[in-house]
Length: 639
Ligand SMILES: [Zn+2]
Figure 1 (tube, rainbow, N blue to C red):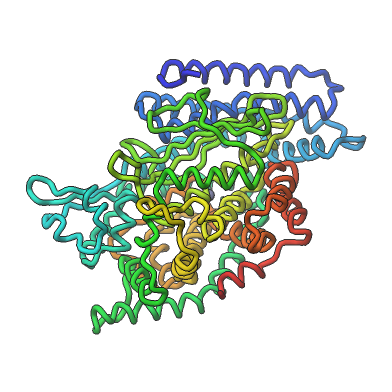
Figure 2 (cartoon, rainbow, N blue to C red):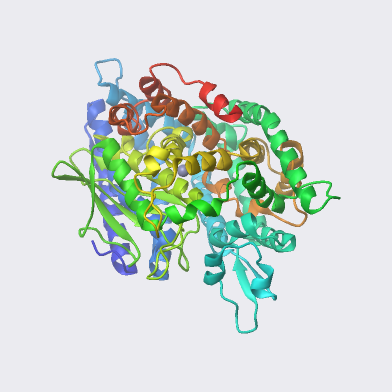
């Protein structure tokens, strides 16, 4: 596979879209007496053809070093989306399912496949009249472009802050940060709003004005470009929902999730926020007291002060400094350790692969073996570079269909990269992120099904963050960490008592964090569960922030412009917390026995390996041996 120039990538796209079209033709040509089995597998073949080009397009438009390939990938994404829209509105294809006789004997898989196809067809508006379907098609097409514009503006909308005083303004920042940000000839230093600059500054910079100014720049990414784009995104989605017969977008977007309705999502977010408030209140009191040790007259804590103050409280309360664990987390050891943990838990072997086709020299490729057989493949694209996606995510490249090519995926992160002289010491937070993304990776790679539609991460969307947030638990276990987190100079494993302090300290602030998360969740829901005409997102954010958190919105900022989830997740930001409640429940099954291969195997069989072949609630109950509950989450919050 050499896809790394725009021409051959586009050729692959042509080839696969042609194959998808042939699949659609085959579906339409099936004899009228075709069985549910035949209709389902023929229809599923279409998804298989576009699955790979769709995955690669998402990935390459986010990470490819060649701008021409990134652009070709964006075009490919548009073509795939247009094809999918066409298919979703295709009367003939729909009728193949609608005319099936479902009374007879059907396997559970086929029955579920047909029921989902009918549900999705109804949700896409296929049963509407010609004029309405045409309107839906046009709106979908517009929305693809608007969404891409929104994302692109965020990707390219980074900002910077020049500090004339150079390192003199950066008191408190660690030495390696200063070394990575040398002063210019005129003595100044320029910081960016990328997470690699933003997070350390928010945690460690002693100068309040430096944090304030960078926080402001950070919350002005993609501003003002996305002001208008967001308004169009909200308006068009509302119009689309109305056209499909729903009273608002959130109604449509929650319907096929575990949560079921927008009202239930709102109730959940409010309940969680209320539960977290007493915990958050006491934490906020600590921050204000801490601020008064610096400024005795301080009346309130500002958004740009919270992480810095929390860091100081942690140091004082838990005698913990987040810098103190970094020597144990050299990038290469963390990578090898997480992969080794995965091998032990799930009984697989992971080896560097020469068979893949990395898109950049810094990208590594690995094969996963069961016995002598390569069962899946993944790529690690872990360091920042110009033009690359700035966050952390797992990209599905190909889903595993039984008997077909192996599943593939890529982890994309932005960790500091090792060099000859610098082992790239990670923060524990980055180690947690690494585990999180590998949790997604395993979900994708382990789920192999005869139907493409059920393979990979094909479960309800509000269950998607369960495997990832669950795997974060491994990043907090001394037993797990001691196996790989050894000091980069002395070779000593990370001390057990340091991990205990790390956990106590890093979890400090969870009440406020949960409240912050529910601010985002309720903000997203409120933008999407009504007619957005007349709603000013910036004003709404300010109001909700006042109501739901202890921090006021900083005047003049416009965080909503860079809140990428408003496109990808739309109304459904609540899904992270929904998933967290379930993942805490799952973690309680492992308890202190995190390296239990037996429990991991059961988890793999009942959940990861199932993909979308059953309802997430059913899979969860199969693993738990009971219905899911809030209890474990509550005890975590109160601890
Ligand atoms: Zn995630």
